[in-house]
Image (cartoon, rainbow, N blue to C red; front, side, top):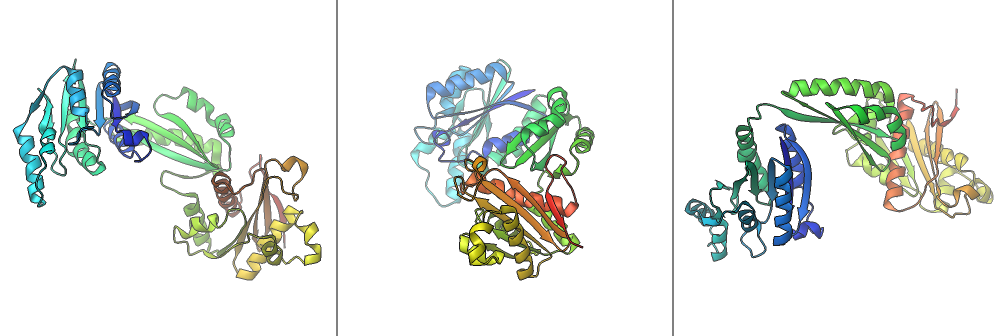
Length: 427
């Protein structure tokens, strides 16, 4: 059973409204065991709307539209759908009474143009909307179903849960088939390297399937299974997840709703370790991640934006600064070490960024810049360097995430054989 969703509204194409309805409908359809193969967004234009709906009906059993059933002149969905299915619009008194009653209950007088919303295609099934003024409807053509819903998220969700999913289960005898997904999360590892580890699963698996999504400094692996019951789908996912974890091991930091900072904060709390931070080009991004989850492990953070602030914090004499600031490994380790001593924390992390073109960089580093990360504790320090740097949001995000990920690896004692840290132990 294949479905398609059509999101209607010029405001969506203009970026004036973020489309949350599509993601919601996708999840609900998956939960009912319905495959979603296409999603289209179209503006309030009769010809383009008709073309999109006609194409959808040629390739999908179920077509769900969102939006365009309001009372204004540019709300065209009911008229276009009626035209596509070859049925005239007809007035439904029960829908008119429901709309008028809603206005009266809220102490308002219904405008004449709201009468438009009581028209739906002949032979269509009306979907009463007790939480809004836009009733939906179900029309059919050649055995294929078109369900038109309002674009207001609260109304769409209510009608989907109370009418659409039960209707589809009954109409297509869906039973209890369900589609379930689980997302595994990886940081500090490129998409191509992940692909070399699980490429065969991406290519050859059918149920469950595996998908990959690359984000800044983070890779998501989505396992999706379809089965007659939730437990069977979950069992299918568990088999593939065990296989993936066997290949990637500690590089997977969490799953589903887990966040990197949440995972690390839990580790710090369990180990009863406190944390301090020094940031430069990340501008407080690392600290923000921890404070946003209410971390009790983070006790102090400093943004050393200027060279003078870095010099003072690292404890470097002025006369030696011109040489020391070019020794990035020594400087970032010194920043972490001095911060740990100053704050009295168990662990300190320093993230030092050098902008592209800086005189502090080697020739082969000047074009991209450089980011250096150090973790310092009573047992020693670890240091990593990356050839990127900058104050744009992408580089700041990458540096922020990698600093937290390197701290996670330090805490679990994991040494990536393809990207080991430079370490210095103290006894």
